[in-house]
Amino acid sequence: MVSSMVSSMVSEAKTQSPHHVVIVGGGFGGLYAAQALRKAPVKVTLIDKRNFHLFQPLLYQVATGGLSAGDISSPLRAILSHQKNTQVLMGKVIGLDPNQKTVQLADKEISYDSLIVATGVSHHYFGNDQWAQDAPGLKTIEDALDIRRRIYSAFEAAEKETDPEKRRAWLTFVLVGGGPTGVELAGAMAELAYDTLKNDFRDIDTSEARIVLLEGMDRILPPYPPELSVKAQNSLERLGVTVQTKTLVTNIDNDIVTMRRGEQVEEINAKTVLWAAGMKASAMGKALANATGVELDRAGRVIVQPDMSLAGHPDIFVIGDLANFSHQTGKPLPGVAPVAMQQGKYVSTLIQKRLKEETVPDFHYQDYGNLAVIGRNAAVVDLGFVKFSGFPAWLAWIFIHIFFLIEFDNKLLVMIQWAWHYLTFKRGVRLITNLEEEPAGNFEERRDYRTPVQV
Image (cartoon, helix red, strand yellow):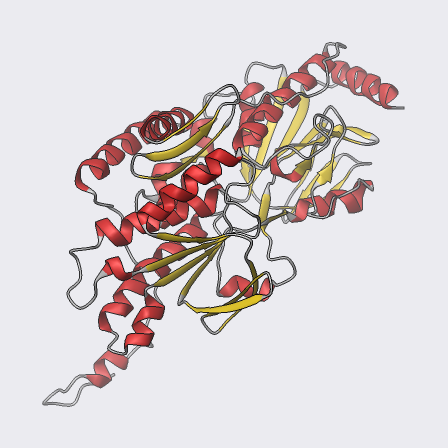
């Protein structure tokens, strides 16, 4: 059945030119898929609810004031402006019809010959979605700006607070989840409190800030080799971070984090709680399941075939974090950028080969290693054949991230800012934005005027 559908697709391409590839999602998977089709005899339509590509591995630096949002974001239209076979549409896909081969936007219906879905994941609170308001995660620019506001506002509030217990709560930061995001956030916040801000306040000593990293497993960075996890924890503790493993959060309410470690229950009074503990698939996973009957895993990810297509639908592909690809190791591939990049390139090659009535082998992920930064001169790198940490790993982390930034101006800006931060210990984007505005007239009403003022 699959072969007949593929043959139908090929013959259709011969009579209707060009073959239309619709890509939903402008993250690493979708963007790399579109770029790999730049010379193909196809029409490409890339749809994303945002008009920019976000370099998510550096999002934590926006959240801690190290970089601006624009430093790690690139307009999709600008990136793809030289691809004459590619159109970019800003919109949200709300449904699809695999029989009619269409995707529905709120104001438009688009037909496709091949569909690539790469919409990623969102935060997962394991059935406790009410925690989202008190413990935001980090997946979008808005998340990063919200976290930045919370972090810097906490220091500002502590400066004004006279009650010692309340001040301690403002200076206590809890991060839930010891994966790369949690580790990198914890390290950046420690450098912020103990170095960058240490001379900026008069009534508080920012070095008294307490940064607590909680991880449910027996070590932080669980996907990494145990020896690198130990080195990462040691580096965090040298920075001043309190690391607690085998610790499960059971409740977050009224600035109180309740956690359990074995039989022991503990509470931490913290005004700032950040979530980095889990992810769940985007809503497109459920939409695909409803439309095609494809199976989803417990996290809502789409279980794909060895060629990244859906069972019974060889013209629909799911890549990146939304895909559960377990054919290589028996376990889903990790939700990291290199996986999405390679899958985007693979699917684009597969589509082009099919149009020529050629075949390609099943997808195989080439793992080049993992790396995470802890702080200044501290990182861990696992390349498989070699593992190292410290200053060499930190340099490797810097150059790899600069290399994979999308546009040259972003590479240059980030490199210059990192060099300046390294020399001065400063973070240049310490802005508190999106504060709630006071009701109109309140300021006027509180002022003591000698003559009446019309408000």
